[in-house]
Image (tube, rainbow, N blue to C red; front, side):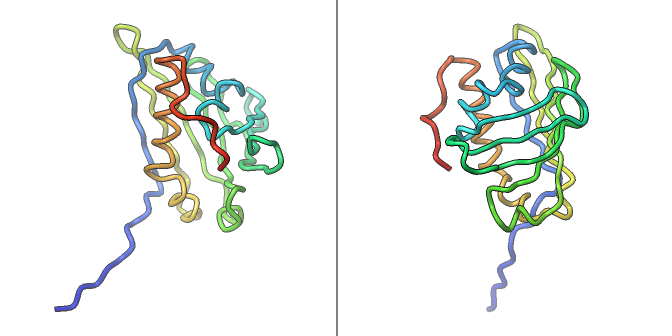
Length: 160
């Protein structure tokens, strides 16, 4: 008997949905304000202009490396934030075209928000898709949820 193993198919549209006990405004602030982002997004130092066509960049915690370099696509506070994603933290990913990340914040009952994150336009960026899939985005979103619900980061600052 011969067994053939194949690599799992990389999803070129990745959708993550979580519920967070926080207001739309609090979630909006957590995804757009640099001091919040650093606490749950691998210590990233975010630069952004909250306007269509504005810059969206993140650097390593010490500022020595540019991790993401893209543009803001859509800004609709506190409901929707869309930006490009160009992974520069990995040389192979850095060669790929820009993909897109959409954050959709929907108020629910009892002070809860549904946050849907869609990372798409990855058809020509398969290495990026593989690098952010599953554990990548879930670590970030779990950290965001924990920070908003408890006021404490999920873990200490990361050096990655």
